[in-house]
Length: 475
Image (cartoon, rainbow, N blue to C red; front, side, top):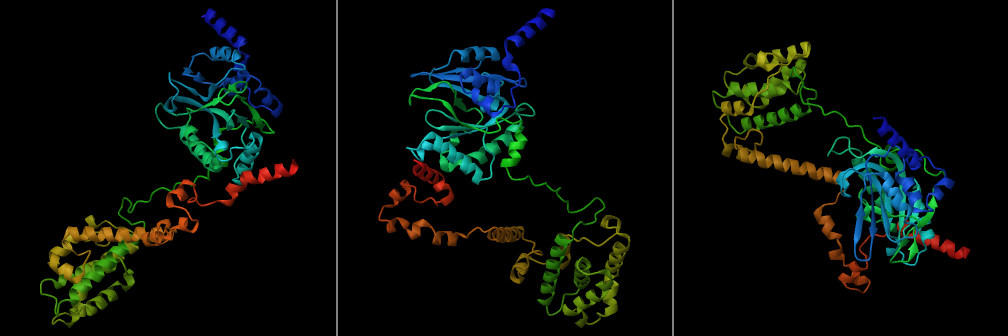
């Protein structure tokens, strides 16, 4: 046991790079780009590192991946790579044998690979780096820790304190928010040539102090933050990049345990529609058939109890009976109406006074089912269709069609409220009908091939051209 402790102590003394180097000031940060070994210590040489370091070397006819267990082995290998060609290093740590995003164990930076030469082939790297900083400033995004020239393109890196990629094995953790930040940064720098194919956590970058074999140019530092590398966490960067999180409100249930409604909006719509259809059914008859009158009045009174205050409920029931023609029938008087609906009025008063609503125990307002109403009134599918009854329709297919139509109209109103155009409006203003390529004297394929179908964003297109004009004036 003592021998093992001595070996660990000796290994720590031989590897001073295992000390945590953060934070760096600007002067010490520039020194980390003098050689591959210094850059390796900047990215991976800290005491909180957990996992393996992945690096690779590209030959003219092959690509060789390395994933040693000990950091010391990587450090020794990088000490002999100064001036070599096509050396790559991953910015994160891994827990497996392969360099895959699902095996990332520790996140250590955000990065954006910028292929500016695809937008402006003759642009100088220093000018492109200034354009990147200007674009981030226009988007109110934090500046990177450093910008590096890879021999052909740029690499912008935001260093953060190491954080575990996943809270539990094979489950999403910090890497989910890391991807959101990566996506936002790539979208902001896309007009300058951000490469979406390299935004994943398994991407590699070229190492300073080495060469780009194809371009025959050195990998070097272009710009570093005036404050160097500050002590910043993933959440600090995410709060500056992502929009503020909205607090998720707990979902409200329709009823509580004792049956009391939290909101009567749903019941008001239900009973208002039910009351209108009951009245429509009653008016269709010259005289409501005998044997259905008590049932009809009782159902209407139960719906009115959900729409009217208890103090006005009795008078509202009498008014509804008059409009429905019940009081015109021989033997039907106001006292008969009150006698049929007295239990409805009594329950409504008790609920308003005690606040109890439990129909199973004879408390609170009645809640009648659709089947019970149809059973007493004897409404058929043909009768419901002729009267335009929707809620009091015994045909389930017609009710389903109505439900879908109501949902379709509701969703359409929601889309119009959000500013989305209708299909007819979209087709009327589409390029297929307006044919803008004819005004420019070219074919449709040439119009899309040259990218003229994209909407020009002035701020994005002139980000680099403005800097070029300034450099020309200075020259």
